[in-house]
Image (tube, rainbow, N blue to C red; front, side):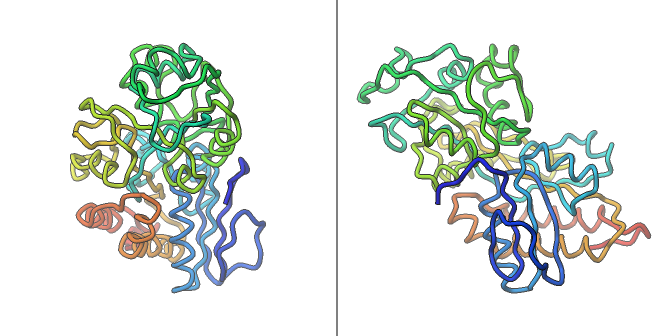
Length: 349
């Protein structure tokens, strides 16, 4: 199904409904808002969980920046962000953070005659396209990495996120690592001053623009590339190998992650070493308050995430996400017990 650039709201209340206003709720409804990166898998998990428990999930896919604002304002039970929050930010607001799913951000192109995983891009080339320094698809630097590919003299239309976005945080973190010019001129954040291009809201909006505009290049979470049948590129990774975006290659990037020693589970997975590592990999995180005024509601939230960890692997892998390893799940749930409590100081989990 072709996605639009509109904000998506996931509502599960007896059936899977996407993008509708609130109908009559199930007896228990948990609320969240934030990252569009994990939206496809959260949608699947929520539907399956609702069928088994009757508990509904109302999740607003509004971007990581919006999710952080909503959890800080305490208007939702949990926030979701693809940009890991640093320990000092978590301490400031009294929040707990944990990784929920792993995946990859994927550059996609819309060039007549160029199919999925046919174009190769080197890191500096991708950065210079987004800096506006490379403006034609038949640029010598692009041609050098694609000797067998027929490339037109068409203008490149850069597409980027218009909203505060963890997907953008991951993407610009990568560009800052592979391009000193990008690092100094633009930098790494959920929202940046883009040198060139069109802005779309959410992964959905970028996918929609990139799918419609001839000569476009955009970046989306991999599930959006799959669902919209977009042409993903091969990227040269840290070890100098051109690799495809796959669940196995996202997992390769995460293989060296030491979650046990990552304070507040702060972890960045871009430009990781390894022959098969996809260079723009990342985790998506959940944010909840440590002190909960409604322990029963908070427990329902944790029960949903516990179920998703332990029963959602098949759904995650069907969308080319990577489930969080069982050893990390154990760490996370130990953290829930130690850190997330009612106002009376009693553990909720």
